[in-house]
Length: 453
Image 1 (cartoon, rainbow, N blue to C red):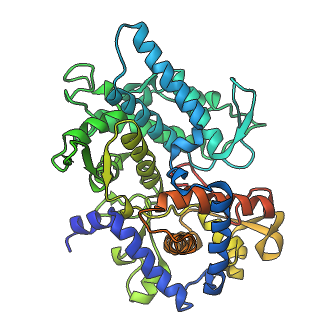
Image 2 (cartoon, one colour):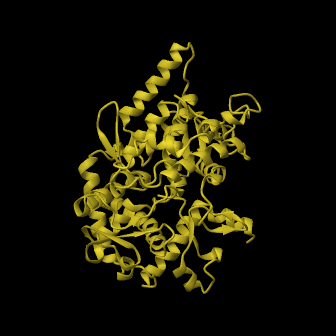
């Protein structure tokens, strides 16, 4: 394989499952450095997750997919869509479904880039309700208010030039960050938004340029390019077809390629794996796998890709394509479960993954609740080998849990998709069990810079 072929493979969705499966095989053989796998505990996790699904969704068809839309709340999205339509009516124009989808993609992309864990202390005081909201929902709602205020462009779109001008101070003010309301990874978030602006403006692949190529501000006006023009790219892509009912069908692989290639310059390069001078993004060398293969730890053959935020973007963008435009997205099963601390925390808290004592010695520990290792919650960098093993095992076990839930409920994979399992069972279950054990804190804290988790 040439280096270009290796890079293409490590950016692909199949590579995520395949490399994680290689690490999981080592777990089954007891060959990992940081975790022991207890397969006898997996049926309990399946029962626990199934009980949550049955409790919250008597009608399985009503389970929504996992995506950023959920964190805003249906009412807030409905309200902002109404505002867009009212503004268009006042201007004697109309908001068609394509423009509405573009605006939602604009919102979702910047919101996902702001979605890395903010820490347990941060909350957002929503002006409309006075409610204090933390974690993912708080970040989503804060990003919605910044979007409506025009910080990212104008009140219904995101523009490259506006993103390029954003400062950490502006973001801190808009997200209500203060010494008494601290946020993890603020600088990293602001950096991602600026990188997004630069990426949109340069856009070597023509993904975000819009139908006219200049982002709606003139043929050469790259400053007006926007994330939502991804819609136009997909609509005109050669792989996009229409079925016998004249419904648009797009390939998930096309959407994935647009995100993983088009947004590659957004992600930081420092501290990441590189191949021929180019960063591989959220992909990391697994030392246990290198040892098993008897190769150097820098060899691409032991690199495990996750691309968590890009996958989260992909899950989130699919929904407006389907719900607003009525498009069919073909090949959604290629996406994996998300390797983050809620899904992974579920596996530790219910005993499927048992951290070895060395893990608790490796990270700084805060004595909170009943975390493992004598009560401490270890804090680890995203690059730590324990985190890489944890995330790898999480990807594989989410597939197995999904299969188990389907078996319990007598459903097929088309009747209960992985995106629905993440939403209704594992992510929610991970949050609920963490609340019971540690007032919501995960069993392992990731020292986040705002660019991975």
